[in-house]
Every structure is written in structure tokens, then in C-alpha cells.
Image (cartoon, helix red, strand yellow):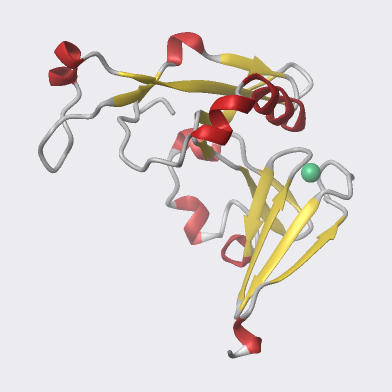
Length: 169
Ligand SMILES: [Zn+2]
């Protein structure tokens, strides 16, 4: 085994929230960072600022609006696909604190599946239920509550890749 290619993982202080919850994963020349406290993530493709970074400029407006600059790079809140649903940045409150939202996965009734065509043919059998969206004040709080709420299902369900995703998520 080539040890130089293995991931190096460390946990350091997050420059955004100040908590020692920033996971840094180094793989070859890539450096990925994800804070488990505030939910913001970055990597070496987001060095610089929002005005000049080409990768950032190519992102959707919905992603850009939550971005922050800190420590010489751009930080973007992570969208997390879980076996039981999707967890995503929702909105800023009046103090510019980011609120988070979770939408569970639901099965689509067989007679409804015709409304959810797959791009490559066939129909989706599951979708995210945005009507059951739950809002959380903090990233970490939401993760804990979702895990508690869906403990049993998380342990039973294997991740599935093919889901209908609405544009707003
Ligand atoms: Zn943080």
C-alpha cells in the first residue's frame, strides 16, 4: 500500500465559529474542511475571496447567498444527504446566524410516480418531503435531533442514490 496517498485527518479550531470542531482531511494535494459545529465547509479550490475565485463565481445564487469569507478562503454551508433525508442551509436570522433545515425522505405512491420521471427513463420511488421540513437554529443541534428522531431508521436504511430532488433544495 502506498501510504503517501492515505487520508490525513485532524481536528482544529474553526475560524468562523471558534469551536474546535473543524475536521481537516488531506488527500494528495487536496485539503477538505468541514466544521461539525457551524456546518460550514471549504477546500483548497475556495482560496481567495468571493470577487475573484472562479469556482465560487460559477456556483448557483442559492449556494452563494450563504457563503462567508474567513482565514483567506471562502466557506460554504454543507448540504448533507442522509439515509433518512437531506439537511441543508435554510436562511439567515436577523443576526446573520444560519438556520438549518431537514426534509425527510418519503415513498412516492405507485399511482403518483408518473409525476416524478427520471432523466434517464423510469420513475422515482422516493422524494424529499419539503412539507415536513424542520428548522433548527444551529447545525450541530439539528444533527443530534435528527439522529435521535430517526435512530431506528438510520440503523436499518442503507443509503440510496436515486431520489427525486426538487430545485429548491
Ligand atoms: Zn465552525
